[in-house]
Length: 620
Image (cartoon, rainbow, N blue to C red; front, top):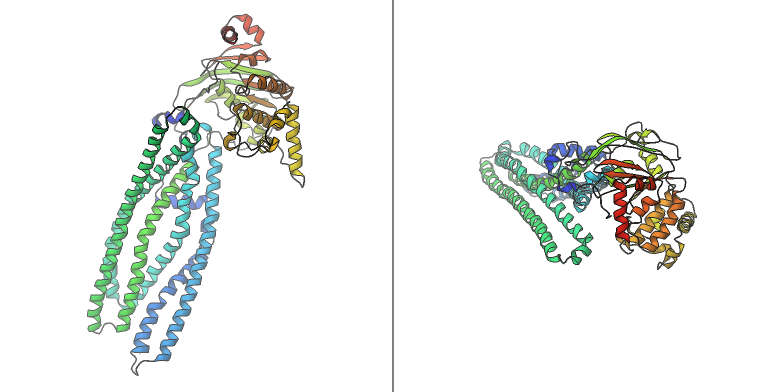
């Protein structure tokens, strides 16, 4: 029999066939710009913490910038063009006051930067942590609706776009908005007519920008999606490099990555064309406004409506007005980029957790595990029903083997018993309690799954085995005690000689995903990790299927001591496992076809007998 999983690849399931209860991670949240900002601040309240102090400092920084026009006006009208002739002392005093105000404004701006940077980093750290935690809470079915690389991109790359805006665009937006307000107020004092000219000229641009931002937002949303798809394609190719080389599909893989890179480039280029058009329109209008003010202001000056100092000061104020307006177009574009990234992160956080801990979940005492399935039905999203009313009563301290053809529902039963998924209907119980009513802490303490392919983290054999230690080892001799526990585990499993043959023993580096070890060696570490966890119920997805015969014998003996007095459910792909079990569950097309000890089922001449006869014939 060959090893296989029972569930379909949900990434290939059409979207309209998926469950409507959040089985798919949306590409982006459907919130608008303001809704996205509100939701983002709700998730990361640290960003807005102390905002009023920051706004006050920003107001002082903006106010300092209008000191120059006032100083220029006073210097010209009172210091240089005074009735008694130029007054050097007054000019020096005004220049000194202006310089002092500018220094104070610069200090305020620096403090605003520091405060925004600290609050932004604190808030974005919360955003990353929240998103990362939520990804782990999502079921494997939901996670599989998006490529791993694209999912990682949401927690890293997309958050970085938010970080760039909050830290750079945030300060510029605050100071620029206040600067426009202060400049407008002073312009009104000098000349309401010229102020009206400025605003009348800019109002159309504001309307155009508001309309254009919709297209910019769509363009940046597409960019974030293309970047995620590109990273997903690249990460898949890197992880599957060995398969790519083995099948000689490097050229085809290169084309696929090239297409993803080209799609990203096209989306980026289109968004930048829109940005350039928006920014250029702001520059053009700003220059035209300045020219109109010079003409109209000169006419007013000739008519006696403005002094020379006031006209020059007004021109300075126009520059202070138009500068932030030009900058605002770029800031708004960065805002759209940030909002696009924010939406993608929020979409992850908004994805409902299908396998969640219920309020008031209970904690069970440790002890022999009695597993019961009552009329359990299950269907993967968009697919047909996999299990059809399965009812099982698995006594405690029993070695159970679940056998069946590929796609019969064996692995699905293992996932239900470990609550990686929940049944569509019916209940899965541990010692009479529905798994959905158990706290995750209690469930994970009592039930451990050893998958067919043991996943190892980048580190050493010691590090990976020590993940099984339930209680954190602390104190000055924590490392020594953890090492002793791991050494004892390998010894009791009969694996001390294997560890001794490793290049650096327990300190041997396993590499990324454990690729420095063979598949069998990775499984040895995974079994040792499960041994250290000391669960009440051990669920094995044929943990010895990837191991050579000699190692299989060694592990089989070790598992005898591990499973003694402990409930064990093994998804058996080799019927030698079923022969050594107390109870065999035969699953056929999603139903329990037969149940009983190996000898009885062979004698019954049913489904299991035929499977066993076929297996015996193949092994001869």
